Amino acid sequence: MVDHEAEIRRIRDELDDLQRRSADEMRAQQDRRLASLVRFHLARSLNPAYREFLRAHGVEHEDDLPRSVAELARLPITSRAFLQESNYAARPCVPPEEVQKVIETSGTSGNPLRLPYTYEMTRRSYQDLLARAFIIGGVDPLVPSYWVVHWEPGGKDDWSSHLGARSFEALAGEGRALVASTRTAAAEHWQCLAAHRPRWAVSAPVFFMAFAAYCEHEGLDLASCSLQRLMLGGATCLPEDRAMIRRAYGAEHVHMFYPSTEALVMGSELPDGSGYVCFEDEVLVDVVDAHGLPVKIGERGRVLLTYLCCRGFPVIRYAIGDAATYLGAAPGFPGFKLIADINRIDAGEIGEARLPFSEIELMPRQFLGRGVPVRAFQIARRRLGVKDVPVFRIETAVADRATIERIALDVFTQNPQMKDMLDSGMIHAPAVELYPPGGLTRGRFKVPLYVDERQQQYEQ
Picture 1: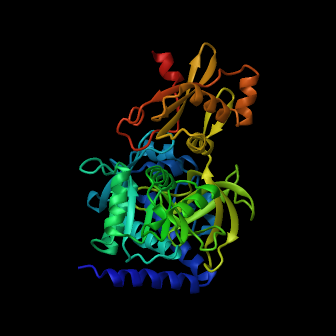
Picture 2 (picture 1 turned 90 degrees about the horizontal axis):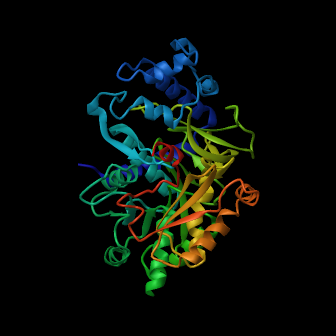
Picture 3 (picture 1 turned 90 degrees about the vertical axis):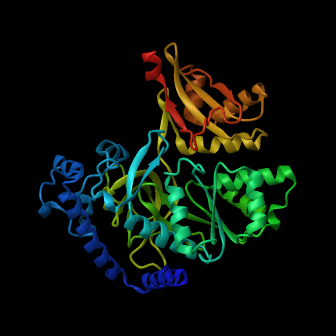
């Protein structure tokens, strides 16, 4: 029998203890856990992929492994491709009985990455660290909450956000966390909020924005609902969008936390909004330059993660595909880093230039600002003759093709490189494919932002 109040007290006490420790004490703990982690994955015979990867980079024996965080850069950087090729879902680094669930993510590339979550990993991150992030955000985890996450009621439920919500539900206690699906109709969300009157809610920014638009269209006073604080994660949120969400919901506070499928919960925004404190008692976060070296305070770089609790698969100097600005030591959290301005650095190639996924993510908002609500969006790279043609795939109830084509051209040419290539005749003007509601998603929760279909064209 779980004593839910005692568990939350434990998490609060741990948070207080982290703020009282010295940086030296935290570094000593990190050093011990890192040394244990890398030895574990070097020795794993259940899946030797990481050991072989290390040997290919000149790390042969335990003596070659880092003994402290200061020596972590001895190890090579790992990638999503490495995790996919190593097939940890079928061959985890721990016995099968230690695996709670195999999780699938589509990510920005659209290629599912399947990973084995252990019971310990799920408990530590999706209970303890989620609760920690929310406490920093000013909410009481035991107060009723509302979650909108990816899953299919009665069907597919192997996305990480759903497991996280259910794990937190078990921590908080029955009836305290109401978990809804991204497939739930907007009218049902409104009914649930009215019936259960949760005090805070958790979802991605896109849900809060879309639901606010629905309520405005239906004449519903969203600001009168019971929600006082909103916890946002899973995507970036522009300051303008954040301000709009707060106004629409009449919320006291809108708080961001930093999750990922590979390392679960990595950090939380500080209450003053100055940046994200990285939970480096569990996840080491490094911001590095193009050579893999740490950037200086105030500089941007790509984010590398080392998850100290992860035994089912190795997350060690893992390039997650994010960029961030390193701000130095986190105030009030000795031994922890502070980062800000987190965004994706993945990009899709069109012609001779790259269109960042972070820009593609913002395009549906630009369509909405011009009166065209977009339910799903994708840019494809196709070949027409000898030149690329960018294809805008748009799922919307609006049937005004001429208007949508004008918006697509304007949005596309806001990127200077794309405009230069179009003006110089290096690529074709964007083509538009319109899909009715459900036509592009076709039952998928996440449509890849970008796909390169040239090879498929060649094969056909």
